[in-house]
Image: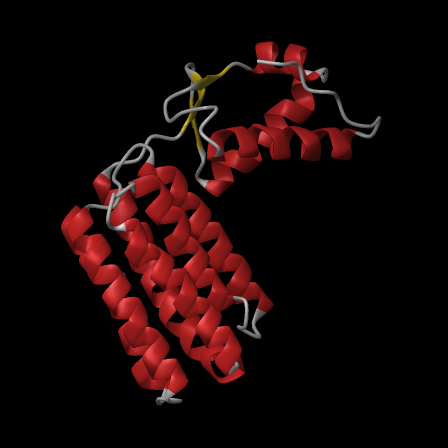
Length: 218
């Protein structure tokens, strides 16, 4: 692994730099679930002291991406199906509300753009690649969420999707049966938005869209 260039002179910027670097390595799979984060080795590689590095690890622990065990040290979090199910249930509620809130702000062209993403998902079912399908699924949902006027809600969705993406590496992935159901339900969500359905109806359906995956984990 190449040595990262260290940040500027301020303690705050060093901690922020370490946080961003470690977070990106966890989320892109460089540091897999269970990988041990040895402070002294990482500090030497990055070119900082262990102080900002430990601050970064504490933030990552708060994010749920790192697990710190006393007298053992820090490791990239490993999740079980129960934790993933809980995250999916939270995400279902957030998605339901965000989809309903986004619907009135989507133009016909924007709905069409979301439909095109779902069409690509249908094509991806031919030679099913769970990783590629997951990326398209995220692209589809965020093509809707970005129209939500609540910035805090958009931020919460980003956090939960990021955590879920990481969980997939140690817990679960899409199976073809749920993938087929998913694209059909996407079409229905867009149909509801297109016909300007009642917000409560959109919210209920978008929320229920996540439940089968959570039930499968359970």
